[in-house]
Image (cartoon, rainbow, N blue to C red; front, top):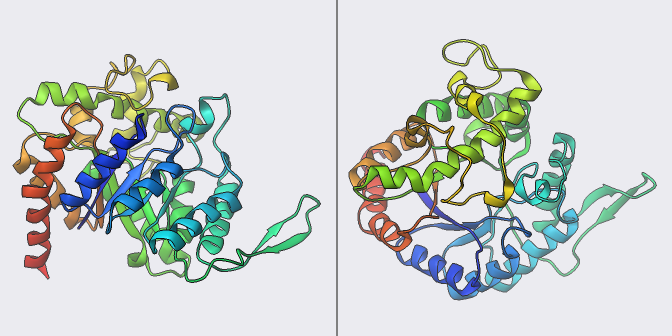
Length: 350
């Protein structure tokens, strides 16, 4: 199992770079950042600084979207970083959340997401791609200065059609919650879609993400992490509004697992000005049980136990949101105890 660390690009940027360096020192494989250019600082400028200050970690957005930038601009950024620092970038992408909604926009269509994945991956991997011009005529694009760049594209998804798209076109699947039961449901749907599309289902990397806080004060850990249930609930509300609530005790008869739909019933709304913040003041509807299920909390042994369950489900990477008031200690505990334990677990099974 690999490990990623997810940070917000809060000022000063030097602090984000410092945390990325710490993550690398403590054995993390990837460093991810939010990509929401109004709420936080522009990520790709900071990604360049992170890559310059590290030697091993892969760096990318968690996640970008097709709406904020022209797709060729996004691809050019990755190809440039790869030329400067070696092939150490990765593109996480979804339909768009805070980056578009904070300005009154809406997430893109799945059609646009599908096309964006293709264009960004091809251009970002030094290959030519055909796009539509303004008049609808085909235009072939290539970055003539880019040679040997490799850009995997991982798609973030919850809903049934987004999961299907992920299985059909993505190099990896990003699931932003760390509940083993829901994770299994989601992985099964992605791999089934891949199989139906004639792809090898096991070729799709599975990345599960959630807030990670190592400590012994579970009440405080929950309060620092409750924002995440609000963020997930915002995505789930979109799905329920579009498709209806899941049916059946295990979610198999519905479009999403029943447990994932139930907890948002008391949700009153969402203020993007508090998006991703530990002091978010409108997530009281998120019960402790959901915080515990979606996040990875408790002491190091609790983290090892939950992550072992996720690893056994086929999760390739756990991406830890490290966005609380004890970041350094959590990174240290992962480096000294949790990451070695999970890698020993992998070796023992191989």
